[in-house]
Image (tube, rainbow, N blue to C red):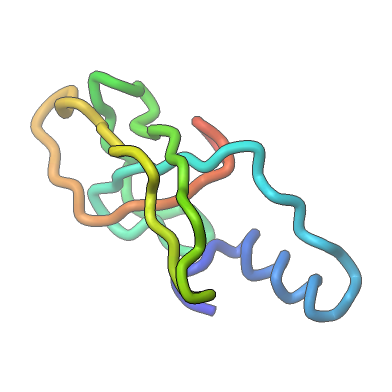
Length: 99
């Protein structure tokens, strides 16, 4: 299940086995990275911005369309980078920091 975090992969597999039901996150946050954060979350470095020192911004989503997609319902504005930075990847998180 490449592209999903190890946590998310395990949650899906446990759900399919019937051993655990994933709990919806209280919020969803988007983080920018200067490299691949990897499934385990050990790669890349999170880009800091003037909006969030951890670089993560809360995201909200609209209605699911055609059982296949959904879009954010408001702009996700990271503000200006705190310094020179290149963002090549993004990650979705259940916490503003950590997670």
